[in-house]
Image (tube, rainbow, N blue to C red):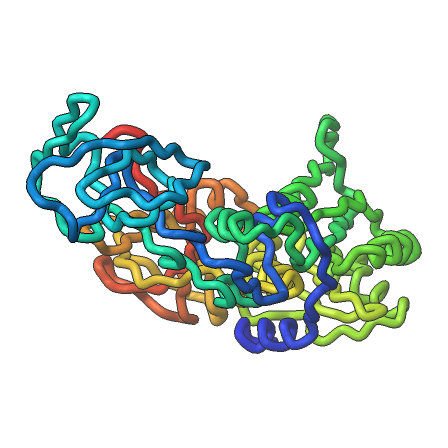
Length: 404
């Protein structure tokens, strides 16, 4: 069996970046840009007021009051210099008029309609945003390979960009296999189960930023499995669940090879999710995951999700791993590394984790209850209060309550 790290390395070496496309600036959110974005102008384009107040020249201030001689709203300009010893009423964002270098806020003056008297000490340059203090013309503001978050979207808009180039979304085909499977909406008969894997995996694809393509269910027959796999090659990569073990009716590995695919490995030294094949078929990555719901979802997190992210230009491919204090004694009695579902929380600036109980790979509820995977070494015991490494699947626990 190949190790988790070697499997990840082997897979990612085969994943190439997808093509790029131009989209509207809003559609660029959470996408990766392939190019540097250079400021076409200074931001701000001119010195401007940071407050609603009064602009004047500090050097010509002769006392604690000034005569008000005009009004400058945002969006207008005042080209005539403001005379020494006078002030102009100015709104936030309006360009500083010639002859002025300082702004005093409205709330720090007494205003009788013609004169203002200061009620605080004013320093030179107060409340003036200088030209280019945010961005200078010609500066590389957003570098190639950057994820476009809301703040990058705002900056692109400020620079006049309406259609940024981004890596396109990965289309990921999802196929379930097994005569025992029924689609959601059916009533299970004896010996039958509902196909939940396709939908949990499709949700994981969406969560990673990809576009899932549901292929349905392939019965346990070689020809039918081959037909479904061929249909999946219209996508950028294919994820199959079930039929990858060594049973008499497990046809996935045989189907891949009969279609000309090259299976790189088909077992990973881990629990859950040991039955896992990775192959290239007509240049497309194919992942064959275990049929057990937890095994499939855990394997997706470790191997498929990083591949989708790399294909879409991301540099950060893996979930964050943290050290956490174990809230109960735990042990891995097996000979494989065990990824135990855990409940992570934060107390006193430290991560804490407890297990979700029964770790059966068919127990999907163990993932619902948890938000992390505890890495437990083979044949290892852990005491309560000991430190363990946890892969964080969901950081919602770090968010605060609506009301404190």
